[in-house]
Length: 442
Image (cartoon, rainbow, N blue to C red; front, side):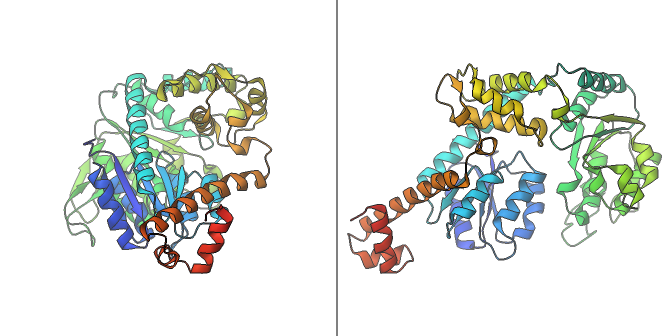
């Protein structure tokens, strides 16, 4: 395949597993990094910008499910696959619920895993190709949303700071992109930073840069996001999550257009346009003493509030059609639409995750649809009134299939000697017999 840009981060407290899996996937042409310390994940995500994370579920420092929730909250574009040596139906359900694409039981079925990673790489490449050709479109027929877009377009040519507010998934980053594209700085970079995704101890360095020796791992001088965006614009996402100390540094950049790198004395002057966004109520944070009032007024010279999808009457059907067309192209399918039952289900849904949730729903439905239209049964399970028992049955079937393959392979390699097969599977002989009986193996 020969692609070195598709990046994979492996997280497992078993260093031997990390080394082995990293070596196997590196030979396939991927760029691999790993850590046995889950607390390092946020730093590694920032440094490696992975497309895919493969993470163990059971680790001593932090649970894999908690880690999965954190990754998907702060970096929803990263694909995640979970692995485990201790398979339970509860963990499998939780992994799928919180956004894992798949889960594998150790010992890992390497051919299947490599095939899935290859598929994810091809999908990511195609997504990037489509995005580069078409860009992200803001689709709406709703009058309230049209007024919001008009405000953003009118504000674009100015140099005034802009504050975009709205629930998660409403499209704040897309509005920031639109503002930059319509501005006089469109030929210069729009540097983006998610303030919630970076530990507070590192955020100041990420924004302002640092000098060599400023702290333990500062082995060389590094320019910060403000310096990199000089002459262009910077998008500060989730600005409501930063500390008062960091807020003071941002205020100085807004007021004076200057700062010093961490550990430095040279004053650096920049010409930047600041666009900020948050899903938090900043006025409420001000009243609690958690957000600076002076920074709020500096940022909100122009304030744009995005309505939630549930308030955008008439937009759900056209967004469903838009994403269906997009994912038909992406997955080489020719699905004509949604069945009446599926439309009813989606029409009644409240969409708490807004456009991001709707997009993910359509993508998953397209992937699993084998017919001419998407039926109710092909929608993600959370949109249907299925019982947990039905979900558990599906997952138990997956686990059974994996166990059957692992036992069959162990018996083959041990030439039918059950004690040797049990030892290879790290279980006792009685457990092997019980599993074979359950799975109908003789």
